[in-house]
Image 1 (cartoon, rainbow, N blue to C red):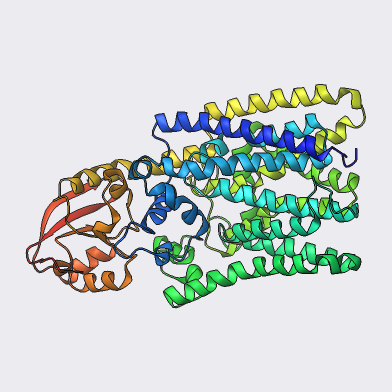
Image 2: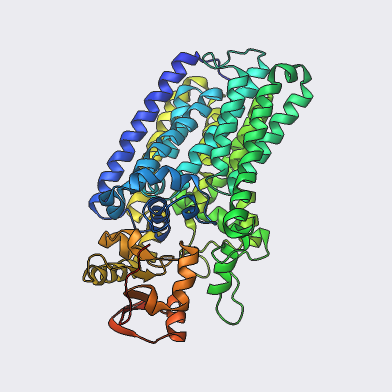
Length: 541
């Protein structure tokens, strides 16, 4: 088995066919999920759509509404779709970004496979990835996993193609694409990854280091690629610098996303019960690795084959290193990068993963394991190709058998309920009814009344009722928000306070001239109290 010398035009056509086939598959998934009201089960999906919507729909629209914790690119890309109130309410706005991202990720897995694998084994790789029920479900939501997977796969792919072009000393190694263009495109994809998820920062840094070392070792490439490398470096270094500058300018702290009031560290501090509960993997990289790998395995394969999948993937990576000794294989090994990243994030970054099979027998952040799907797909297919190399005539039969097993595995996962889907269902069973009841209560208010409300919690009530965000005074309008908390009765004709939120605390300190008109409680959720002001008079803005 060696690197395949496929005609670039033929592979490009195959990749395009995979792209459209996977897009069609995702549309089928969208039809099912939309019909069964599954698009907004994740609270984070609701929050992503909310941030994207408020860029234009708020009392103070603009880039400041992007917030400080979540990176901005998904919200910027979602924003045009969320301005359609119907798409915002039913969650369809998220699918118009996630479905193309899923299709591009599938095409990237196939294209990576075709660099080293035959057509049947490349199909095995993309089938394992594309037919994962959890990924198909996520491709219909506003979650960021499909977008980041596409960016990670294509960032690695472009660097692989660059190395391949340099190996062959051929400036037209991939359908007329020069190394200069490959390098600049890789920089653009990695800058997008940096603005999507924080794992993208590590991915971009490591790929930049690999490219720079390659150019330093093969110094005769430096002169023709110097300008492209400078652009590549500016993109990779400039993206995080811009985010730090934004945090400093808007929130007064360049690291507000790490240590601000809405950061993972602050959330963990607020939600940790008295007595010092620490999540599994806290300050233990070993335990963190076990939880992350278990989440990845349970999300990818039937529980009976979980451990076998991991060892097959490790063996496949080893086989790829042994058989593909050219430098171009090394960037593909970064498909394993989510493992060390999430081990550290769980151990020291206040990012827990809870699994139903292990203590504390709950569901939280299981979707992070999905980032190992490309490694499972590609290196699993590499192992199959290695086995087939001992009897090449049997390769089509082995590929057919593996495709049948993939179909069986997908069916088993689908019937049992994909891990990420079950997490969404479990964690939304109290939130969704509560937000529906609160939204109905808000609809009964005067149609143009301004509402003082902390939208960091249960913004789904506004979404479900279709109430414009510009009708709310919320935490995204910093100066107006702080002024409102000092005198709630004068700030708005209506205030919505949830137990323990900033408005509830402000009303406890300043209850004058406020009258409760409705109380809404639901199991597992804080009670919401709607107040009417007896002294509010509208002011010209």
